[in-house]
Length: 67
Image (cartoon, rainbow, N blue to C red; front, top):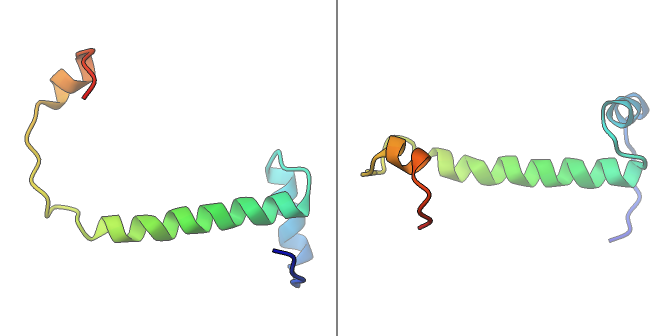
């Protein structure tokens, strides 16, 4: 989708320097992916401590079976 947006120049410059990304478009796309990932995880957090899990974590870490 093509769009025109006003982006903070200093913030964009910092993002370009901190990443291996080469273009402003790449920075914006990466930021959008991160935003979506973080927002999606918020729904998962509400289940913390509410789901019952049974299993042997040590066994799962050491065995080579795949479920």
